Length: 332
Image 1 (tube, helix red, strand yellow):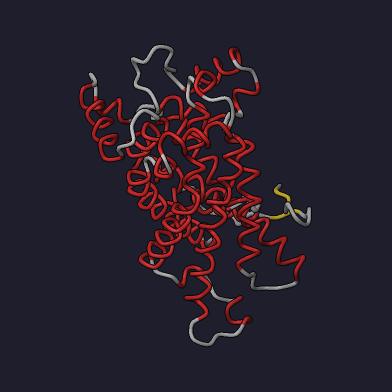
Image 2: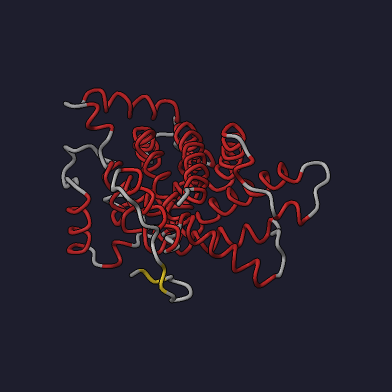
C-alpha cells in the first residue's frame, strides 16, 4: 500500500504484467513524482557533478592564484602554477587533487541552492500575490537560498580550498576530505569549519546577481514584444533552446563575476592552511591586499576563473534545465 504524501489517501499503483526494465523504470518515475521528491534538488545535484568533473583543474589553478600574495603578475602566476603541476610526479593526479570535496561540495551546493531558490520563489508568489516575479524578488530569493546553502557547505569549502591550494607533497597537506574534516575538528574546533564564512555570505550576492540576471533574461525572451502576464505565467522554460540557456547563463555569470569576484579572493585567503600566521582578520586581508597588490590583487585568478566558471555554469544550467524538464515530463 502506498499513501499519497499530500492527501494521506491510499494510492493504487498500476499493475504490470511483466517486470522488465521499462516497467521498473516506469514505477520508479511514478513514485518519484507522486512522492514529490524535489526535482530541483535532483537536477541541481546532477548539474553540479557534471560541471565539476569537467573544470576541476581550472578551479585548482584559480585557488592557487587567489592565495598567492607574493606576486603581482597574473600571467606569470598562471605559468608558475602550470609548471608546478607539470613537474609533479603525476601531473594528472595532481591536477585533480581535491576533487572529492569539490565535487561533493558542488553537488550539495547546487542541489540545495536550486531547491531553496524554487521554494522561496513559490513562497514569494504566494505572499505578493503576483504570478510573475520581478528582479527584486529574484534577487532576494537567490540571496536567501545562497545564505542557507553557505551555512551547511562552508566546512566542505575550507577543506577544498586547502587541498587545492597546495600540492600533495606540502608539509601537513590533507590526503583526503575525511582527514581534512577530522584534523580541522581536532586542531581548530568548530571555528575552523567556518573560516571565511563572512566573505562567503558576502559572496552570496554573486549567485543572487547571477540568478536575477538569468531569470530576467529568460523572462524577457519568453515575454517577446507583447505578451500578457497570464501568457508569461504559462510559458515553460522548455520553450528555450540549449543555445539560449548557454547564452543567458554565460552572460549572467560574467556579469556577476566582474562585480563579486573580490569576495572569493578574500575568502580563499582566510581559508588557507597558514591563515592564522598571515592575516589577523577579514579587514586585515582587505587592507593588506589593497596596499601590497593594488586593486588588481582582488582579481587574481579571474582569467582562469572565467575560463572555468563560464563553461561550468553553462553545463550546470543546461543540465539543470533539461534534467528538470525530463523529470517533470516523465510519463508514468
